[in-house]
Image (cartoon, rainbow, N blue to C red):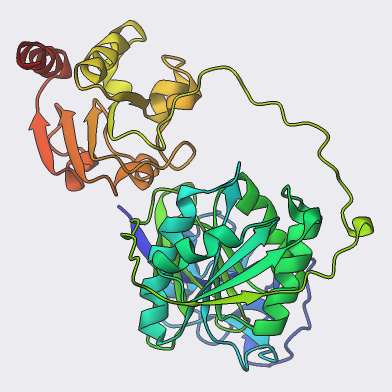
Length: 434
């Protein structure tokens, strides 16, 4: 069961107990940890008068750190202020309180997308973020901007506009020819401090996962990683949905007290919009103010990997196998079906962990996020971690002998049957047709 929860984005670390943070007689202070969010101090407290000792909070705690003392709930070390016990308490005896600073909230407007590029071409996640950003900007009635950083990148500006951007912030410098954490972070932070976007979206790629926390830390703002859904609530805050607690729940996270609101989004989660050659926009050239001393690393040589890798990202047809295949040898059925469809072989984490196939084939939260035209799941039950990586596929066919398997909840077509009977028949029929 996937439970929706709403949290506030926490970007800093756990601190020692501050027992006297809030001196209010009505609270029985059991705080052993507080969290400092950029701009906030947070603590959790139990009302001594309200607590009825029902123990509802104990079963709700995902960390198992709540116990009863003298019929009063006590929250032990390790609390990260997730709020589960607050929601579970029937008498509202548990309270999360925070001192909030909103000094950075004024004057922010616009949705920005970081336009990632490699080998002189824009990365696919850039187009996906432009599509998602366009929807968010329209809901807020604000402009969509794209940030393009590099050397001699102006040729991509009109392309970004055609895919939805109203403004392109172009930062060009010979020192930015290759990606560096130092240079790109400095430029991005300077641009944000000058133009104040309300939302910043970055791809959850190797570059994005390195850049985004550095930018967030310097700006002292919230950051939610690996989002699978984005929306705007009635207060104009960005709703950032991502799997949490090992994928057992889907958490919707907000950053109501700091700006910009930052999120990284996994590739292939958002649908790419069509290019519109008639769109017009503004190109804003930005000064970089960089010197060679600002860049602390230098790329001497780029050696491309020659070993063939599985290209799940761009595959239009993927056939995946899971625990239901029972043995490594049985994975040949998946390969044969994929070959018959001219597709690519995928796998669940269970199959990878069993060493039936290499991790390059893994689809899911800890593997690849894919969005093919056709995804066939064979013997995969459909854990939330796997669904997070493939449920945006255009057409999903699930083959499983368990009619109650969660995979059928997202499948376009479901076949309840033994994969060792169904898959060979599919291969035989496809071989006859092609």
